[in-house]
Amino acid sequence: MSQPVLALGIAAVSVSGCVWYLPALADVRAGADRPRSRRPAALACLTGWGTVALLVPLALLASPWPAVAAVAATGTVLTVALALGARHRRSREQREASAQWAALRSQLGTPPPRRTARALMTGLTGGLLALSVAASGALLAGVPAPTVLVGAAVLVVAALALAAACARPPAHGTRHDGGRHDGGRP
Image (cartoon, rainbow, N blue to C red; front, side, top):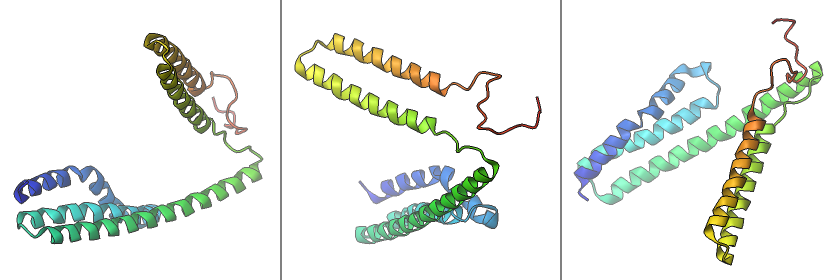
């Protein structure tokens, strides 16, 4: 592939990346209005897309491939380092917020929130994985394909019905507010 064609492809990808780098630029410009972990994450995004944009003139100028690869590798390393730093800072912020919420809940005497969605998704994922393994084993054992497909379809429909039933919001008038009161408002 010629380098001008490669440059055109990189430019198209770089322009289409605006859905990521424009919000990142807004996060950097917002400064203290955003959580502290958002700035390094935004800088990582800008570094990555800046590296992609820098590759366009390098490819157009027909720079040697080792130079283009060195710029791409350097940008990738910087992007990954900034992203890992942002992820570490974000996990610290989440632990701090969890501790603050736990302290507030203990003062108010409310129970911690239920984690039904995560448990439901874990169960569904594990069940569907086991179903696919069982169906594959049945097909390898010589069970006719229509029988396996009908059985698998019935189990998938049952799992989705269970998921829909568990994900449905509580009926009006039932108390599922975790002990919180709305002050008598309708």
